[in-house]
Length: 112
Image 1: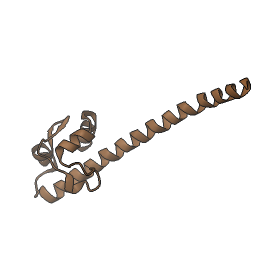
Image 2: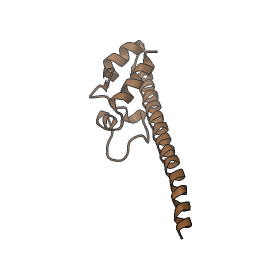
Image 3: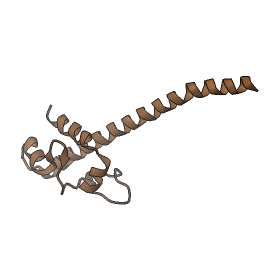
Image 4: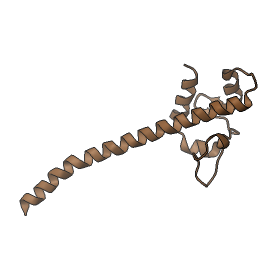
């Protein structure tokens, strides 16, 4: 009986760290997909609404309040089909999904 408990303990010490690593990598990949989806939505928004305006000017006037925040009235809902759940859309929901660091990554990706 003691041997069985020891074997189970050894298996748990092997499996738990691996499971935590898998979960962490999955969360990181999900965040990358979210960031990419928002960036693509911003580009589609620009194509629809930009009217011959340079991208940098459009982003400053319509998308980013600063390098850490999106404009309060920004609604990318039509460009993010399936991104939101049933509870809402618009900048309020984007602010709940994206952290400041995520917005900074999107901002930096436009300024490369």
